[in-house]
Image 1 (cartoon, helix red, strand yellow):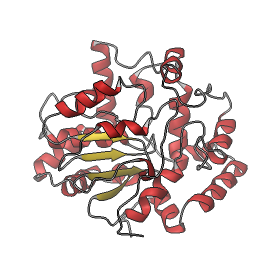
Image 2 (spheres, rainbow, N blue to C red; image 1 turned 60 degrees about the vertical axis):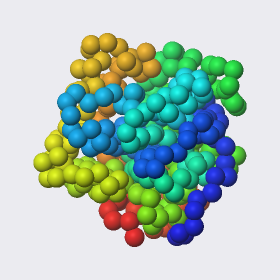
Image 3 (cartoon, one colour; image 1 turned 135 degrees about the vertical axis):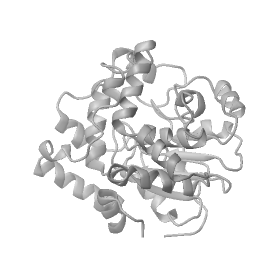
Image 4 (cartoon, helix red, strand yellow; image 1 turned 30 degrees about the vertical axis):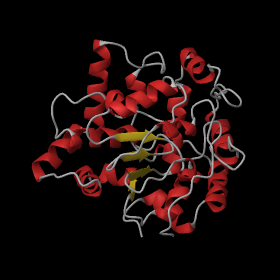
Length: 312
């Protein structure tokens, strides 16, 4: 644990990521950065913030319009990103999938780090990655700014994907996360800074168990005034079932993501449950996970990542 400021020491550039795009964002007092490795509740947390910051209004603005994924290489030009972030009104909540060693640290911002049991992350990732269309691969692997190898096709065998994900890194300083980027390393870079006043670690398990408490914790951390009625309305609005229903209804009015995922929003919002790995991963698979934990995580961090609860 440390109270010193995090240091930006890495550049993440691959088929999905370009960490240098953060250089185009001028920080503002009160900015909120929502960061996960992936498949850990990113959109869920963005939806909670969207409802809180807009006081539960109906309809809410689209997340794509108010919460850009800054480090997404394929989300428009750098010039367009800079203009988009500059034009955002009110408090901004920006999405990132970067570890802390690749993300700028702004003392005036809040960093909301959302984490999940890695085995549950994998089950969601397998569904997500396995549903990419040819169009998706063309988006991720196209462009003159692609750095490194293209994203390979998802293996048909989930155990092959797991073995790569647990034992290989995409970047030379990683030892897990292939063919995307680190999952365990992501949490490991934030864990030492968990007691900084502008850093909060939020666990997916806790959001599932008591969503109202999670909504209130997010509001308190971000200094967003709330009362019991608003907390209850935001929690109801952002249950997994209601978010999936709303996304599918919006998609029916005009396609938004079907070309990226086979099945569109029904695929993107898949199960939202934990523990499905128990019926899939073998003892041999889990041994690889235990080895990765020992390589990358402090024991207390590993325990919290699996269980959630208060951060010590």
